[in-house]
Image 1 (spheres, one colour):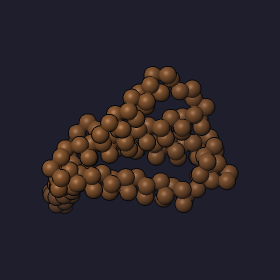
Image 2 (cartoon, one colour):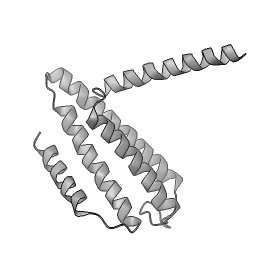
Image 3 (cartoon, rainbow, N blue to C red):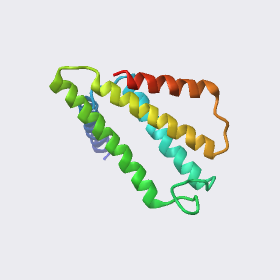
Image 4 (cartoon, rainbow, N blue to C red):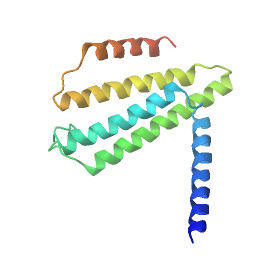
Length: 145
């Protein structure tokens, strides 16, 4: 019984590794920009849940509290963001370039950063000037491609 569970775990872990590798490849590879985007997407989603669930100050519902439709919409938007990254990665391949995907990822990193900052503001946190400067630099970097 224990051997069977170990074999099952190994098969599941192997399948997850293959799926993760395939998804990573489809999105143009696993680099610092992609990792940053995924981390920021997770932070944005969780911070949005905290804004609604704990602070009741979300602008996504009339009461400011959690709303299941808004939660699903948020997840679907995150999924569509990854679809757009996939499209950009494929465009790079077709065009023989190496900047479309990177520009799209940087643009979405800026978007996620702004959303995280907005969520922090809804929690009552002051926003450090260094973060605001970094956002401005990222916006400029996204515009140059």
